[in-house]
Length: 208
Image (cartoon, rainbow, N blue to C red; front, side):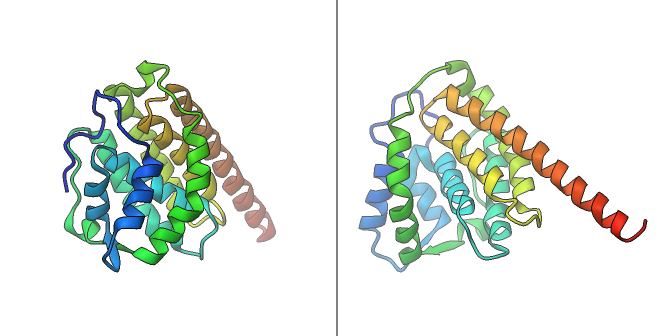
């Protein structure tokens, strides 16, 4: 459950899209646990898993899904902030995906992920340093909290911001990390303003 290093200093030999496609094609068991996914992704495990959950949250889902998927994102974001070797508690490590659903998600996401990966390249190295990644983990933690709040469609924007940040962190693209952070901050302000407007309108409607 503990990959050797989440942010190695050497270039990665393959893209995340290829790693996920390979895993989806080769996995023979009916379910894939989070611990197994983390191990299979190796040095990409922690950020890669955060990206997968963010993508799953960024597409339309039944009500309540954002809370179910958002809670693991809270923990993973905290792990990024904490740094060091990732560790999952048993209740989270044992959570699993139906492999058919996992393959369907990968099939839907891969064309987009493949195109995005072509735009990524190492740049603005200071924003992908270990210290900066810890700070970015704090941003993802705040966005994960926003994501699980019971706001209609309120999960889409913060999940997208986390996905952008995760993509940048995986490929050490500081420009994408910066863009994701700024988009996340704008999202938080927008949703907070929307909630404040709705509460004010409700109070006026009730004559309070």
